[in-house]
Length: 276
Image (cartoon, rainbow, N blue to C red; front, side):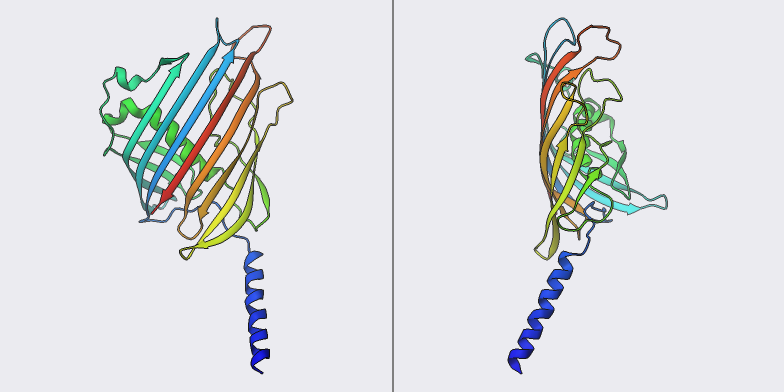
């Protein structure tokens, strides 16, 4: 009887594990009121191009942003304000090797300790960002780094996923802007696969991989790459991500009449970590 009882118990446990593995889980985090998270992101963009001007162009940008985010309550319109306190902001930008940092020219002060307010909807999409005048000189760097960080959320499927399932996602939140590329240029196909759901300190962590494929024919501008994203399902935030994208091909600058399109090559790398 003891052996039978143990056998039945093991079957029940196995059944629960199997059922859990087949249960669809939400992978796009939903922010919760009162949650405080600490975020660090680094982003590197390198672009080289010929045919956009009288000579070759080389643009490099490297930035680090660390901040604390405190979520407020959702209002009746389904929007939530989050107070963001900057802890660290570093950005270097060069054009053909020459510094292009407007903050130095404006004698901008250290932004550490400054606060801004970001507004999100229930899908996690970033809306308005309100910042004090003291951050005006840092606005371009903040837009780039915050935009890349929060694009992680809207780049995840809204519908729940099962382990092993792959979904194609909307690319309108693409955190990559290329100089000289006309509006309407086709964005890549981004697919996300849920690889596993693990328990870490009692929380469910969704582990996903990202695959980026071009949609343009060979020879035209193409974007491809890979990435990983981890989401704390129970507490509603992305815990980590790494992305490596490559850009290559031909583009025609807006209004350009040149017989030959410009040639562009570049890379975009992003790292993101968040904790409570």
